[in-house]
Amino acid sequence: MSLRKPDPSEYGDAYAHYLEVAPSGDALALHQAQTEEVSMLFRGLTEAQGGYRYAPGKWSLKDLLQHLADAERIFAYRCLRLGRADATPLPGFEEDDYAAAARADSHSLADLLADFMAARQASLTLFRSLPDPAWGNRGNTSGKSITARCIPYVILGHADHHLKVIRERYLPGL
Image 1: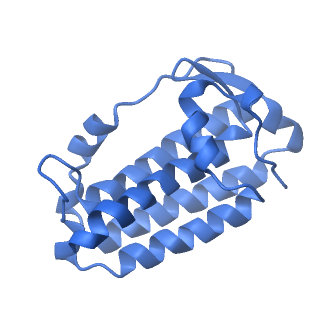
Image 2 (image 1 turned 90 degrees about the vertical axis):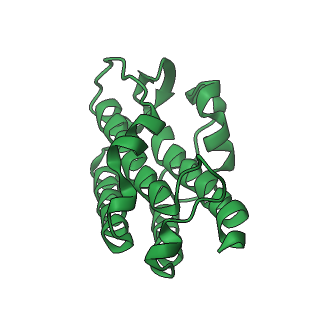
């Protein structure tokens, strides 16, 4: 499997930001590299640092890691549905509600990182399993048209967005 980065005709404006910031290249290799980046970043934090919030009302680093795992699963599920030619419209999700319900600060960084790694591995297994024609399947997620090919790059762009926020707003305060 070798995926090319999708062109703008394959997705709506709602996904443009994540797809624009996602790197070009082989999706599987990019996911592996990003997985290592996330692992190295969070393995280097103490439990106290995992609870750090750069401002009142902002997520902790543990919340962010849990959010990456939750979003990974949701996006991968969307990819599965599109990849299997299921045209049923798929709803969005409210990330703040998920973060509140997850109570990430009550979990260890090691457990949260293991959860993210398991979700990422499951995504990679799914991506490897889809036949080439499935990547062109189009569906509707969060009220927007999108092809299955977009989803691995949406995941990359979404995680890159949050990694940038972590580097710019969290790490300087630790």
